[in-house]
Structure formats: structure tokens, C-alpha cells
Image 1 (cartoon, rainbow, N blue to C red):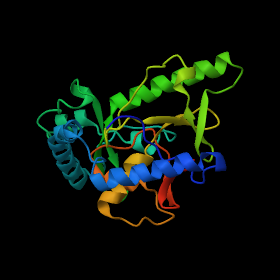
Image 2: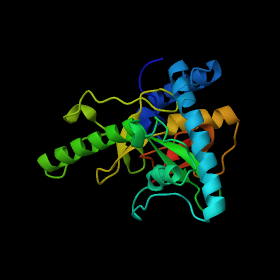
Image 3: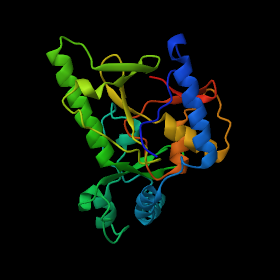
Length: 252
């Protein structure tokens, strides 16, 4: 299954209603055939982190129980939630809570940071995929260069949600940039706000998770929690999503 899938505007314009309807029908077809579930490659990626996450989670729990603090690296207040509280793996190793740093960790040559989320209620270890973060950062730098070279104009594509637009990659100097979602394996969509800050559109992945759980989200519920529950990965470079008109809608 190829191509880019994204939930479009919460309320499409009249000119786009036909295309939007066609997309919804396609999405429903995909849901019923099960194609939205991860391929073997994506499942292998999940499995490759399973033992690492379990080991680090156990170490974090023991550390917190004995030390009354979490083993995290200091982060600035403006760091986004899904990048903020990195596990201090060196501390865990040096204090004997883990025998060795997992090979999947950046600290040992791997391609992931291990994070703690829900730090005040139920500290949970998640994986920050550095390939995803790096590619978003590359698109961000390209958008910044375009903005500088074009008197503040952005490489804006279609409006996906109120105040959020697809990045028109064809206008940038990273025209061949592609990124697969760590959740579904589908090609991810880069989007940005009016200032040019770049995010990933996780609506497709959230819809998949909601459908799998047969959930009925509340209107005031940040839907990224479904990604937390469905995977070891953290939704890095994301905005909050809320349920509106039976679909996830990104909001700033």
C-alpha cells in the first residue's frame, strides 16, 4: 500500500468535498481490510525495542522507588513533551540499575533516545526515533532557508487543519525527503504553522489506533494518548489532536 494518507481539513471547502469524500471512503475501505496495521517491518521495529523498554522501565521503577526521584537529564522548559525527559542511562548503569546500556540507545550507537512521559502520575518509558526527529529538523532548516530567501513567504501547500498547512516539499531544497511513520509505515506528511514551525501529521496513525481499540474519544481528550498506548514510540514533533466530526483534528 503506497502513497501518502492524511486526514484533511476538519471542514473541507466546497471545492474539495468530492476529493474529501473519496478519501473517507478509501479510508473506511482500508480500515475494514486491515491494511492499516503495521507491516512485518514495522512490527519488527516494535519488537526490537521491546526488551530495551522493559529493562529500562524496570530500572526506572526501581530507581524511583529507592531514590525518590526520576533518572532524567535536565531539560529546558520549552522542550516539547515528547522530547523532554530523556532517561539518564549512564546514571542507571553507573549505579547498577542496568548491566549495560542497550544497543538500541543513542548512547551506545543506536538510533533512539529513551524518554519518560507522564512523569508526575505514572512514569512510562518510550522511544524517541532519532531518524524521525532528524528528518523533521532537515525539513525545518529547509523551510527556514526558503523563508529567508523569499521575504518571509513559506512553502505552503494545502491547509490541512485550521492554521496548519502541508509543507510543499517541491518548493524546498529537500525535494526528495520522505519519512515513514513509525506507527503505520505509511509515508508521513510534514505540516507547518503560520510561522513555519514544522510538525508531522499523525492523524492517520491516531485514526488507526482509535479504530483498533474501538474507542469513542472525548472531545477534550488529547488523542496522542492513543499512540502512547498503542506503541513504544513517542509521537515526536507533534501537535495535540482532538476528536471532531468523527476524526482527529490537529490543533496548535
